Image 1: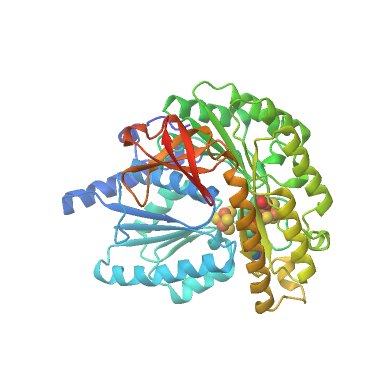
Image 2: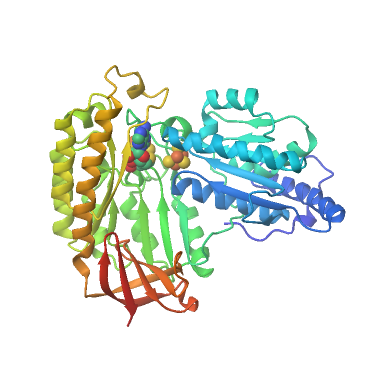
Length: 481
Ligand code: SAH
Ligand code: SF4
Ligand code: F3S
């Protein structure tokens, strides 16, 4: 992990080093000079604003980007009208893309009033050549564009962008490089995501992630454990291990290690009180993992287990490599071994060739598994994926109808499922002041359910006991005990 480095000791008048992370420290030192120049001229430090679209992987990347900007001397702000604006984009569904284009329109206006403003785009959407073409032709006011494989290079790219007037574009098709030891600026002091692997090799036929995030690469266990030990020393009590398919962790390491094996090691780290992970692919969920979860006092009672569809015929076309029956058997085993586990899922409605009978199969699985929550998505056609080329795309009206039916069943089963602890007490990690009512705190149970209760903000970051007075659909209202 990053140890505070004295950037002023780095000689920026020599050639930059070739090896990482030293090369990036050199460019951070160089950027800092530019920031000082800005300070002298403007009597204040330059500000930066980042916005993350997409999943927790992207959120973690944004923390790394913010870490680099912080080291260089930029000051974080909640104002979009900042000196440096960075959007970390997502392209998993088309609406994620559209939101980015919409926001770029707003930025263009700000830049008219502040021509020195720098606009940068990075993340998954930038890995698509068609997006880059569109930016080059219609969004010339963007200063810097990079992808998912080279976020560690932000300082170097920023330097280039100060030196060159034109739009700087640096997109890598793939990488096997994992650069360690760069600064990170965490959003929460008491909890943190940790990448345990990057990329995905599964190629589900609807999904663009393997194309924009590249091949699966696991981090060395020693690097992960070192990072978590330092986080624990820095006050982190909850860690969330991140990967597109954590169950296949470690397969491509020089010294292979299973995900369950990694969890056993993390469990030993003092100070870490809660361990979460996402996402688990049902096809790779091992008995060893269930056993480790069952025996653990720290691994949270929550498993996000994406179903996508309950129809074996559709699952096969999705290239998910499990059947409805295999999924149900797995859920049953989990409930038998870990009775207090909450299972959540992702569902896609409207995949090519899906008929109402298939939607009924999905509903059947929802009723039988009894999810605590299910994120339901309308299928989005992603160009370049096998599903986009399938002839039998489903008409919108039918998709809507199926989507509404699924959503209703999800809400009914979840309400019942979440409510099963009403009247009992639970340990809750206090996360923040409630968004709507300042007198309330919001905390999270081990099984991921949120609880709102009156309390003072000093409790944020602590694990407290709360009585679960009343279930309101997906969350509880409670009081401290
Ligand atoms: N790696 C994770 C998922 C990452 S994407 C996994 O395999 O579970 C998060 C969710 O987005 C997926 O689970 C899926 O439900 C949804 N998704 C992915 N591609 C999609 C598409 N083309 N249209 C609609 N939803 C999609
Ligand atoms: Fe996409 Fe499938 Fe990989 Fe998840 S496992 S990221 S859904 S290809
Ligand atoms: Fe989106 Fe990229 Fe995550 S496409 S869902 S941000 S991996």
